[in-house]
Length: 94
Image (cartoon, rainbow, N blue to C red; front, top):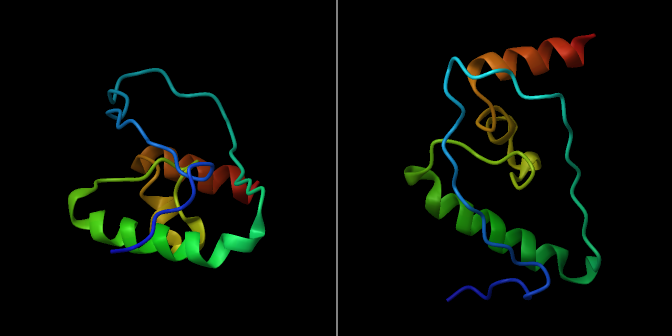
């Protein structure tokens, strides 16, 4: 059995459906990852990637603020609708 991260590092996410296609656009926003104690990084990252990988078959996307964006572009891409991803690509290009 994998050891989960410490209680200080563990959070429970709530799954929310994406906005309706005709919903008004969401405001521009950004998130950053913050970690207080780097000593357990390798173990916690390993747990995150193994657990996320085990859930991949049952997921349709990711919450960008909690996605492991360094695990590959698909993690970032699956955090947005097609239209929002294209908007982000265009904003980054600008």
